[in-house]
Image (tube, rainbow, N blue to C red; front, top):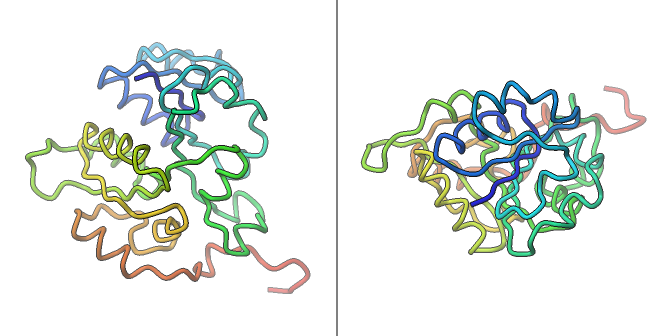
Length: 225
């Protein structure tokens, strides 16, 4: 499988390392140019490329950048990506970092908004786990109490690809429903930032509230705090 990773921060860099260790063909890009990723490329064997080329001819594209940066991606980012490719969004909306995104504040799911920006369906995954735990927390399939990760999306075949990948990385994947249900794994939800097993993830998803916690909302323009 050919993988393109957009972003080389905490999650993007970790997935570059983990997927290369599993033998995947990985290309990685950031907004600052491939020369800034020479160290990561040398460490992992991944190919550092320009942002305009990272998704070309890939089977799997992982978008791992702040929400505020998504609209700045090349408009033709996925123009050379096969229609059958799976696009994964790992992002989270933090108003303190991303500024106010009105559509999300008005109730659109974070990954629904990302899908609209990209013009392609996405699968939401890898957004609720700390990068260091993603790096070090994998266990064999036979191990008890493996960390479980929720996966939301509207295409069952695309979700199956991501669930298989999660298993290969040493975690249990949990089908968290359609993208319209992905608010159940957004920041502030019971599953966010946790290392729960499958049963724990299922309970947490069931206990989630669609109301976004105040600390993960932006101030209303013109209204004093």
